[in-house]
Length: 414
Picture 1 (cartoon, rainbow, N blue to C red):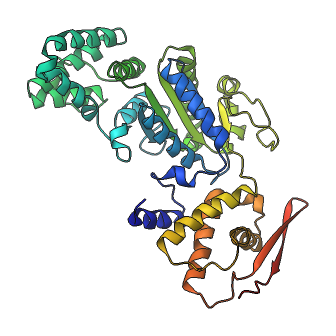
Picture 2 (tube, rainbow, N blue to C red; picture 1 turned 120 degrees about the vertical axis):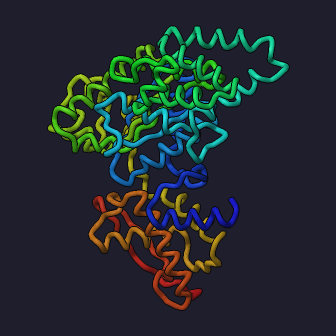
Picture 3 (tube, helix red, strand yellow; picture 1 turned 90 degrees about the vertical axis):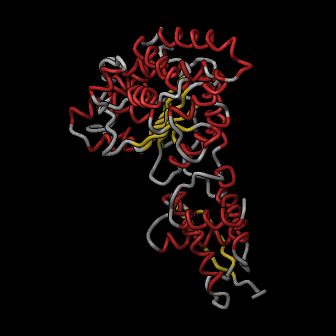
C-alpha cells in the first residue's frame, strides 16, 4: 500500500467507516467464516445455489465481511451486485431488486467502482467483431441467444437487438435496449415502438429476467452472479403488510436458489440480531421463512459455531484476538506517523477497553468498529502529546466474573 492509501485507511478507521480496499490486511478472527464463504462460492460456480444471512450485533463486522466477500467473489470470477435496502430500494418489490442489481454491478477489472451492463459485454462484442473470430461469431451469437431464450424470449430477442446495435454502431438502438434490459421504466413510447419493445420488467417476469441475466454471465465466461444485500433491518420499519411481502420475497428467492431453479446464483444478506429475534416484526413473525433459515444452535452460544447453516452469526472476537488486530493497526499507523510507542501493544489494547469501561461499557460489549476507532484515537493522542504521561503505563487485564479488572504498572523506561 502506498503512503496515500495508508493515510486514507487511518482516516477511514478513525471515522468508523468500513473500507472498500485492503481488507485482507485488517481481517482478524474470521477464518471459519471466510472458509465457509469460499465453499459457498465454489458451490455456486458448480450450479449449487447458496443463501446466507450474515448477522450479529451492531459494529460486529457484518458490512466489513460483506465487502470482503465481494472482493473474494470478484477474484474468483463472479459478477457481483451489491445493494442496500433503504428508501430507494424496497425489498417487498422484486422489480426493484432486479433494477438495483442491474445498476450496481461489479466485475474484477473494476473492483472498487461500479460497472455497467454495457461494460460487461463490450469485451465479448469486441471479440465477435475481430477478424480472427469472424467465422465463429454468428454461431456463438446464435448459441447465446438460444440458451437465454430458454429463460425468457423477450430478454433474448432484446439482447440480440443490443448486439446488432453495438456491432452496427447504432447507439440509439443499443442505448434503448440496454435501458429496457436493466429495468428502466421511463423509456419513451416512440422508442419502444420503433425497436419493437413490448412491456417492461414487472412482477410477472422479473425472476425470468434475472435467470436470463445469470445464464448470460456464465455463457460469457463468468462463474455466476453474487447478489449482496446490506442493511436488511430497514424491513423492520415498513408497514406490517409490506414487511410480510418482503419476507415472502426472501423466502421465494431462497426456494428458487436452493432448489436449483436459479442456477449459479448466490445471495448474501446482512442484518442485525433484531431482524431475527423480534417476534413481532422480525423474521420469526413469518414462520415459513423462519423455518427455512433454521436455528441450528443458540445464537448466543460462545462454545459452538455452525457457519454452514443459512444464518451466519458473527461472534464477538475473543479478547486475545484483539492483540492481532492491535498489531495490524499499530503497524499501519507507524507507516504514516513517527509514533514512539513506549508501552507494549497488548497494554495499548487494554487501555482501549479500560477507556470504554470507564464509560460504563464492558469489554464484551465493545464492537469491533468501536475498538478500531478508539485505538486510532489513542495512538493519535500519544503521537501528538509525546511528553504527556497518559497511556505511558503498562496495563494488565485480569478476567473476573464476566468483567475485566485493569491494573497499571509504571514503565520504568519512562
